[in-house]
Image (cartoon, rainbow, N blue to C red; front, side, top):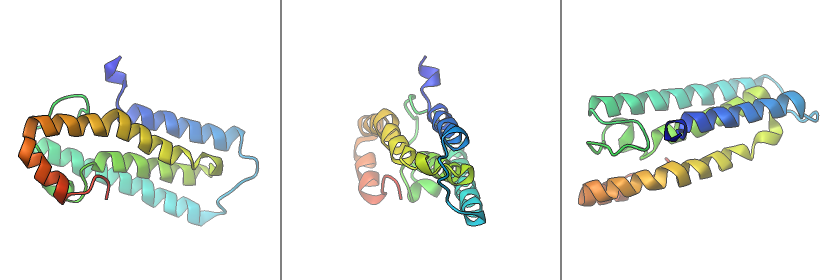
Length: 149
């Protein structure tokens, strides 16, 4: 079951919950028009771009993008020079964008809940693995680069 415990599955579950909330429990709450569609689309697009940049950089350094695996190389270049977790940031942006696009006002609390789950289930264990594997290099990287933005 470990193969199913990956961030895209969590993102999909939260996106389905937001869609269901908008579809069946909207209660006439709305973000109010085309601006929400535009901003939502920009957030989804930005999240996808972040994820693609991150995966490209990981592949370029021949290391794994799979969260439960130990990386062979510590990547500090490209998008990873700006954020230690661009893929997870992309997940949060995509969910926020979908909530806006679905007009799922009551689903806004799902964003910090997803971020909390990503941090507890994936980020903290990944950082522990990096800390054990790369020691001083990771300590310098952690001081230099923020976790999210």
